[in-house]
Structure formats: structure tokens, C-alpha cells
Length: 362
View 1 (cartoon, rainbow, N blue to C red):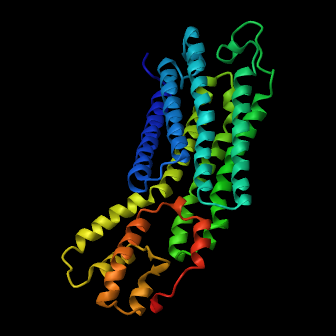
View 2 (view 1 turned 180 degrees about the vertical axis):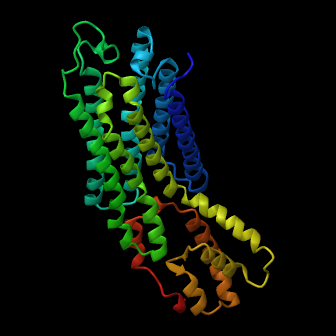
View 3 (view 1 turned 120 degrees about the vertical axis):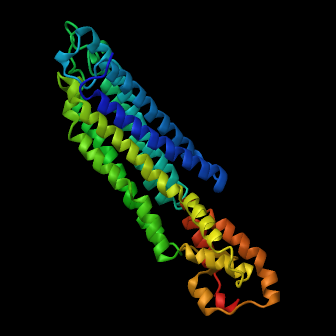
């Protein structure tokens, strides 16, 4: 059946967002497996969230090919139940997909912290998201009697007031919005105290606080929840479907950006290395330090932090010093270059702060 009404728009936007989610999933997987070599549970959960979004898009595409996006009176009566059924299955993937995306972010933050109170502060909203997603799905599918009335409201004797579905939708949506704001602000409590350059901290924190944009789409989605119970469901639910898809897509993009920072920085380093390949007046060790400084990073070598001020104020090493420190400096540069945000932990900073040295004293 040819898509009509808002169907082509819904399908086009959702597949565009699905491509974006897949793109960031590929970038994240490559970064974690090849560059950082630190593939973990949060990456697996991120991939699962992407698959859930793709399934959401597939079922909405099937629903739109039957009649979703049109007014009820424009669709043959025989096509209304399958239209609603496929969209309901797609929304189920969306309910769990958004919660899983929040779990990916939460598990990512767990790799940053080491104190028990910080871990508890992360686990609480994750558990809350898990519980509300289960309840929302249960209220969605078991809120009507018989269950078939969920997608065929024309059944004689059916009614959909068994469970308070609409209040549950608002609770679920509010929980996701709260979680977005919570995880956007939470990193500022401990990352700001780390022994990093101020500019570097601001970049990391801003990239990890992009979840506020997902919260904005979550608020818009909550404002359209009434469309889920409208008699003209296949038309009235278009906005809530799109806002739900946008919320999950933006969530995954915001999670992927900070995790892929080592990939961005590697690309920058390669570009800088090509531009400076003809400069032969700088020794190997100090060229590494210079390149590192140009991209706004730092090179750590056995507790020593080499930055622009270090290069400016410290003396050039002698031949003996250069021989002793070349291998460690280069190793420190390569290791730090590919560090992702999850490797900048409070535990590591606490352990290394006591052993830090003054570069001018060697």
C-alpha cells in the first residue's frame, strides 16, 4: 500500500535518525575496539539500544505502509487493526530502547567513578528507569480487556480503562527527562576536581552534558502523550512517535560524542603530523610535546605533566637525559592520546596526584 498523509514524513525522519544512530554506533565501536582497546558492557548496551531503535523504525515503516499517519476515516476498516498493532510493537521497542540508552550512559559513568556514594548515585536512576520502563510496557499491553483491544478498539465489549495508562506514560516520560538532566549535571561533581587542564575539563564536561538536548525532546514527547489514547490514534500519535524517536536518537548521539573523542584527536594528530613533517629543527621528544600542545592536550611521563608552560619554562634535556626519557615520553604520549573519558577516573587522579613531580626539577 502506498504511504499517505504523514506516513512518508514519519518514515523519512525515522530512517534518517536510524542512520545517524548506526553511524555513531560504528564510530564508538571502532574507537573502543581499535583505538582505546577498552570495549566494555556500556558499549554492548549502546549497540543493543541502536538495534532497538532500528527495530522501532522497521515496525513504524510497516505501520506507515498500511495506514499510519492518516486519519482513521481515510483507512479501510480492515487495515486499522494491523496499523495500530505494528505501531504498538514499534513503541514497545522504543520504551525499552530509550531506557537502554540511559543505561549505556550510566554504565559509562560508572567507569569514571570509584567511590561507593558515586556508584550508588548512578545506579539509583538506572534502576528507576528499568522499573518504569517495565511498568510502562505492562500498562501499555495489559491496560485493555481483552488484550486484542490494544490494537482493535472496535471489538464489542472491549474497554481500555483496566489500568491507568496515561498517568503511567507521564511517569515514564518524566523519569527519562529527570535521568537526562541528572546524568548531564552529575559529571560536574567529580570531573571538575580532577587534575586536568581547565580547558580540557570544560571540553569533557560539555560533551558529557549534551543530554540536556535529549531532555528537551523528552519534554516535548510528554506534551503529546494524549495522542496515544485518541480515537484518531493513527494520526494523533505522529508527533509523540517522532519526539520519542528524536529523544532516543539525540541521547545516543550525545553519548557517542564524548566516547569518540580519542578518534577525533587521532585524526587531528595525523593532520598535524602531516603539516609538520617538513620541520626538522626540533628533536623527536620535543616535537611530540609540541604536537601534543597544539591540539590542547597534555603528555604525561611517570607523573610529569608536559604542557606549553613546561616547554616554555623548562630547560632542554641533555643527550643523556634525552636517552633516558625518550621512550617514556613517547609511550606517555601514545597512551594519553588514545585515552577516552572513561579512563580519566577519580581513582587514577587520586593515586597520581601524590606522585606528581615538578618538571623543572626533572
